[in-house]
Length: 340
Image (cartoon, rainbow, N blue to C red; front, top):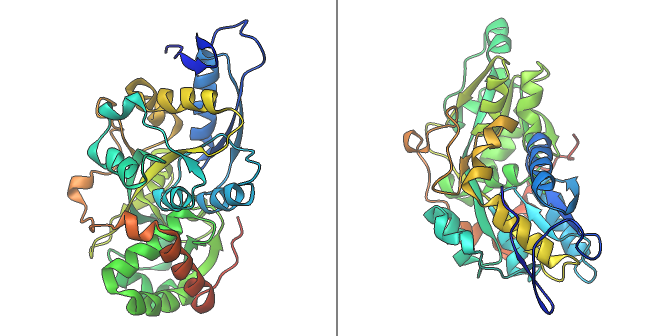
């Protein structure tokens, strides 16, 4: 991996040992903590920049960045669903940046940058679905659900976990997906019915399938790659793509407006979009589709061409007005306190 030049006042310097002043980067990572830690380790091994990393869910990160808008404590936000990244862009909380790496990215990743006026960019993609514990289902004689409608089966009472959409980008994607598939009123009718089968609304989007893997619940509604990760670790998890169709995420990355370390943030931004970096992600249990066209996709990643994907409206459902409206209605009609 290479040191990337960064623009400094008075000229250009490389990130080499001995540069004047300690260089650091304040990073929020909204992916699985193992992936976050792997990225930090790889970056610090090839750059003279110390990374202060915090792992927060997408919703938590958006709230933190918004609360600190007048005095940003974060330089860069990597990962998590694209909707809150788009909301942050619309609110002016993130900075415009056109990376020289854009020409190497998938069309969907570039489109994410374009609709945000280059205030965010796609870093990976993955479809929504669920994973269920085959041993629990067999032991209890439960019918494995293949469609969204199947999740309302009364025999699944207390067997389902999903995250709280206020804190989790995964759960917000599920909410927006159902609205787009069914219509808003019908989707909320569905969610109220589903609530009877939900044992817990978690804070983290991947927590439900991890609970299913541990045998603490029967099924977790998550991004399919999170379910694949549990299956690849040897847990009895079967991965399902809903028969009616499903939404998907464009995991995104954003520079924070007014960041304390903008140059270091741009270095990380360009580095993490590289094919070599994205190709090592499966080693950390990441099974999303990478955004760099030259990166090697994980062999176990769900094949998006074999999944019925809806025409997800990222611009509308990533807007501040629409997100606020849907989350307020979810609070009023469904509820749930996010706990890990």
